Amino acid sequence: MRATTAGIGGPRWIGARGGVNAILVAVAGLAIYPYLVMLFGGFKSSAELTTNPGGPPSQPTLANFSSLLTGPAGEVMWRSLFNSLVVTIPYTALTVLLCAMAGYAFAKYRFPGRSLIFGFLIASMLVPIEVNIPALYLLFSNVGWLDTYQVQIFPGTASVLGMFMARQYMRGIPDEVLDAARVDGAGHWTTFFRIALPMSAPILGAIAVLTFVYKWSDYLWPAVMVNDPHLQPIMVTLPALSTNASGFIVRYEILLAGALIVTIPLLLLFGRFQKTLTSSTTVGAVRG
Amino acid sequence: MEVGPSLLTRPMAGAGSGSSRQDRLYPPASRRWNDAAAPYLFIAPFLVSFLAFFALPSIYSVVLSFFRYNGYTTEHWVGLNNYRSLLEAPDFHDSVVNTVFYLFVPMLPMLVGAFLLALAVRSKMSNLSPVYRPLIFVPQVMAPVAAALVWRVMLSNNGVLNTALGVHVAWLTDPAALKWGVAMLLVWRGLGWYFIVFLAGLSGVPEDLLEAASVDGASAGRRLWHVIVPLMRPTILFALVIDTIASLQLFTEPNLLVGGAGTTAGAPPSAAPVMNQVVTNVIGGQFGLAAAAGWMVFVAIGCFSLIQFRLFREATQ
Image (tube, rainbow over the protein chains, first blue to last red):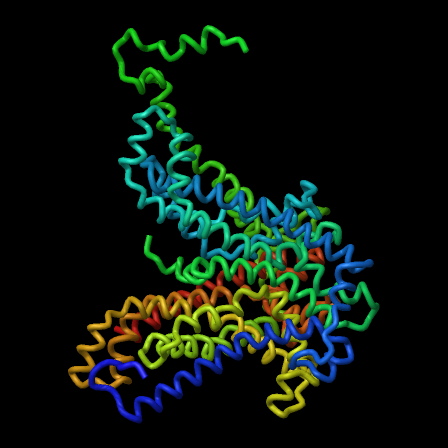
């Protein structure tokens, strides 16, 4: 065993160490166990899920995936997955662009009203978006935006948290770099797009990943604003999918297969951008 | 391709006046305007989206909360009646009780557990710490909808939880048990998030300070209470406020876990959160009531956050 801090050692220390490690292993096991239930369950038959809900499948089957991805349920599934992408990708791109532009102005320009507007935006973070649902529902019903893609793409793109992240990062870009570009004849837009944006790639990537994960997983907003099954994202259609396929009995093995399908993109993102996603938890704690 | 004379002559425009290259590219008057307008143009798209989809609807929803309005006939001014009828409605009472439950019951295991786990990983007692970070965080990655569906299977009558505990609780149908199932789901999804928050906070506690305390003979408990906790104050407060905001806005987990997969019924009154008062009133065309319910959520968030700020300041000073 590796030597530890001087002055501590002996059997008591080793016992405590074993206990702590045992607890950590147990917690990590509990954390990933529902993933195993989902993974195993997606490959079980209905009968096996009833008798063996928690263990690995004794006779793995792909039947759940084929009934999810083909036939009438398949039509809904593919359509909803398509809707989720059609909504999530432009929403993410727009959010990153708006946050980068506004963050850049707050970080690199002095202008009348700057701290007033910035303070107002930060204070607005205390108001939950849900407060606005009744007003926005009325508004969108009047302009014919309910049951559309645009109602899923545009609202929420002014992410104050994202703007704040971009601004914090862009404050670190040296003024000399931007001045040099300007002296060379670059205008405000060129300086932003050619110099500031590429230099901020890490933070913009982080905002993009966070926004994508949030939007892909979002349920409340589309559940309220989009009633048309042809336009609903996968998170809204998924819970009802097995009913469409088989009448009144909820077939959980199919739902687990569906849950697995919608979770895979998120797990891939997590695998690739693990640091980004975990360090995002403390963004709000940073002082501005 | 023909090149027009203006394209050829433009770069030369200011050459005769002996001005700088910048002046040649941007005539002074328009450049000054450009410089002044640029920051506003950069924030304009953000502000348009913010005003249209957030700020103005917020103001409108305040106004709405004083009216009775079904969306197509005329509005009736009802003063505070929407708030009053919500406060008098048994369904609203239930939803407040449920939301307070979802705020406080998962809080203790989640925040204290996450804090202790972070301490354990940070301490030299574990030599596997890099492995635990992603493993403990990964429940947060599963979307709430998917997590609720998976937990429905785990909490079913013959599910793994009843088997593991050796009990026969109807987690998904017994009105007395519904909220506990939701609480377990919330702790499972949330623990890793706060674990990472506290881990980051702990990295701000200087190692030599702890060593100095330990050399001075301070026990592990005293080091925790007198050195680590005071230094972690901002992080703990941050975790409390974020947890409060998230809990009071809760919607997806209870409705999909105990509302019934395959239906759009939503959680029954014994488990429905306050946010259901907003959503069901919007769906039911009672926009004034819905707006009033939304603002009561906001007021609750404000009050709880303020109390936490004050309590916490007093407790640690």
